[in-house]
Structures are given as C-alpha cells and as structure tokens.
Image (cartoon, rainbow, N blue to C red; front, side):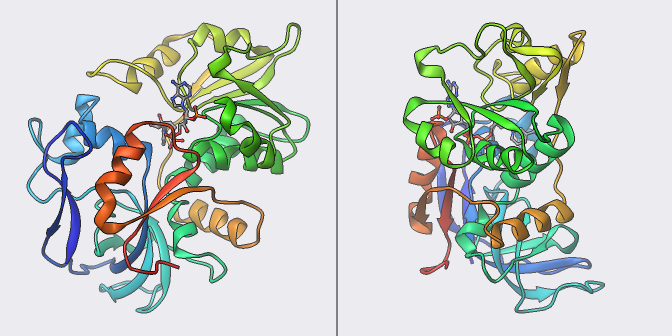
Length: 325
Ligand SMILES: NC(=O)c1ccc[n+]([C@@H]2O[C@H](COP(=O)([O-])OP(=O)(O)OC[C@H]3O[C@@H](n4cnc5c(N)ncnc54)[C@H](OP(=O)(O)O)[C@@H]3O)[C@@H](O)[C@H]2O)c1
C-alpha cells in the first residue's frame, strides 16, 4: 500500500508517496482503509523537525527513520480486527487520532477509534480527531465555558479555533474571536459575538472590560498582554507557544507554569469518549467542521505546503480514495 513518507526535516516538500508494507492487526488493533486524513499543526512541527524534541516522534535526530509516515487524524473503514477487539467489526466506519495516519491502510489501536456516525462524511469525520478533541478538552475542562462567561479565543479561525468557538458559544459563553480580518465573517457565523482583527492590532479588550477566560491558540500576544485582558478572577489557558528551535511551544508553556497567577497550560490527550461526543454533535448538526480545502492523495505535498503557511481557515483534508464521501 502507499503512504506519505517523510524523507527529511525542513521544507514540507520533503515527503514522498511510497510503497510500504501493509500493516497487520495485532492484538487490540484494527487495520483501517483510510478514506480521508486531516492535517494538524502538529504535522507542521514534525515536518519542520522543530522544536527539536519532536524529532523523537519521527525516530531520528538528523532525519526521520526510514518509512516514517506523516499524519495523526483519519477516517475510514475497518478491514481487519486483531485478537481481543470486541467493540468494532470489519466493515464498520471509524475515526481516530493515531500516528502514521496518511496511508491507504493504517493500524489503529481499537481503544482510540470512535464509530463514525452515518450522517458524517469521511471528509468531515477526518477533521475531528486531535483538533476537535483538543477544542472540547480546552473549552470544557480548561476554559470552563458556561452561560454568560466572557471568553476570548485567539487563533479562532484555525483548526482547533473553529471548533472551540462553536463549543464555547453552544455552552452559552459570550465569545470574542481573534483572527485575521478576512476570517471575521467565518467566526461570527460559528457563534462569535465579537471579533478582534489582530492584523490591524485592535486591542484585545475595550477599556474597563475583560474576559473570564482566554484560550490562546495563536501565541501572538505576550503573556502580560493576555493577563491584562482578563477580568479579576479570569484565567489564561495556553495551548500554544512561539519559541525557538529548541523549546518551541514549551518555552511559553514553561513561562506560563512559572508565572504566578492565572495561567494554565493545556495538554490535550487522545480520547475515544471525547471523539465520540464531538462526532455525534457534528452528526446532529450542532458542530460544523470547517473544511478549508480537500487535496487528492497524490497532491499531499501541496496540502502540507498549505498547512505550513499557517493561514488555514478550519481544516485541510487529504482524500485518500477517489471519492472519500
Ligand atoms: N496543548 C495541546 O495539547 C495542543 C494540542 C493541539 C494543538 N496545539 C497547538 O494549538 C495551536 C493551534 O492549532 P491549530 O490546529 O488550530 O492550528 P492552525 O489550524 O494552523 O490555526 C492557527 C490559526 O492561527 C492564525 N495565525 C497564523 N499566524 C498567526 C499570527 N502570526 N498571529 C496570530 N494568528 C495567526 C491563523 O488564522 P488567521 O489566518 O485568521 O490569522 C490560523 O488559522 C498550534 O500551535 C498547535 O501546536 C496544542
């Protein structure tokens, strides 16, 4: 089978569609025929090999291990189940956050795979693993969005942000979205009550007003700026950071941890329960996956260049079959 293999660190063009050995379903595993794979900011870091620590994931400090397959989010149909798998069957459609997701066939730990509701297309389903679960865990667990709570989300038009805006608004929070001006209409349509255009350097909060919580997905403001935009008792939730080649996001997250006061850091984790929850919300029309663009599998390198530019509105999806649905 063919997979998207990363050959070197650096430019996202350093990938190739290669023939690799078909995966086998070990105990507790599924083998899934992938119909659609979603790209995530984490793929950008792995491709760049920065921060350097992420090279461990790719299996090599100078170059990725041979046959290292890119991707973390997929939707597809189960072709094989391993011993001990009770809750999935061959022919079932699933979505999952799992390594090496951009391949025609992928081995997936069964405990991470959520059932794909029939009302969701494979393309829509592929947007949810990682981005959707991170948004849910951020908004539910860290931001604590609820009726009347004033929440600012930076990076609101991106992969996580488009879900986070909707999830916060659905819980009754009054959402302000920070994004580029061209995406103001999009985030308002998703439920933002107000928009801050960071490209025009608009202030984060009007004088005398502030937020109960700030979910920082963009990392383009200093911690001090974010804290000044809080109401008394408010909290900054860091999901991101800018930083050097060594520490990358860890530098800002570390600074957040060392800062006395209302700064929390988020580390999202793969969760079948959370994935099931957002998939069901999306199937019920309560959560809209925003798809910026779908690329056919042979054009996966172009999709990665698009991701690398950092200006994605919603999600980029790779169609692994001719018609992912
Ligand atoms: N803590 C965790 O567990 C965890 C988990 C997953 C992801 N993350 C991190 O969360 C962040 C967001 O992920 P994502 O998947 O949503 O990324 P994304 O899809 O690339 O979206 C980020 C958005 O940020 C905006 N942006 C780009 N450059 C900017 C700049 N210079 N200043 C302000 N905004 C800018 C872009 O929107 P505009 O075009 O509108 O500017 C873009 O759509 C990433 O850094 C990722 O690594 C953390």
